Amino acid sequence: MEVANDLCPERANMLGCISLSARSVLRTIEQLEENIQLQIHEKGKKLLWYSFEMDESTDLSSTSQRHVFIRGVNCNFQIIEEMASVCSVHGTTTGEDIFIEVQKTLQNYNLQ
Image (cartoon, rainbow, N blue to C red; front, side, top):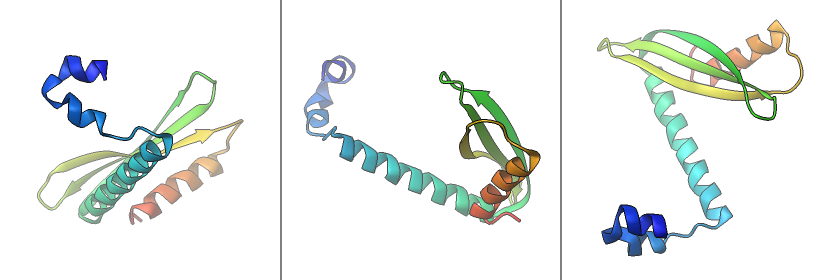
C-alpha cells in the first residue's frame, strides 16, 4: 500500500480493496494467459505469410528456456510479431525434440 500511496494516492483506497491471495493472483494470471493466446490465435488466422524464430536462454537455475516467436504479414501488410511459446528444457534435447516443440506451437495457432 505504501507504493500505491506514493504512485497514485488518489486511487490508493481502490487498490486496497483488491484481493492479493495466491489463488486470486493465479486466477488473474490464467485469465490473462487465455486472453493473450486468443488474441494471438485470431491474429494467426489472418496471416498471409509467416515465419518463426527460436531463441534459447538459461535462467538462474541453469534451466534452458526456449522461446518460439512468430512473425507474419496480414492482408493489410501489417507486420505482426508475437512470442508464441516458452518451454523449459531439462537435460539435453535432440533436433526431433525441437521440431516437435515448434510443430506443437504452429498447430496451437492453426499455422501449418
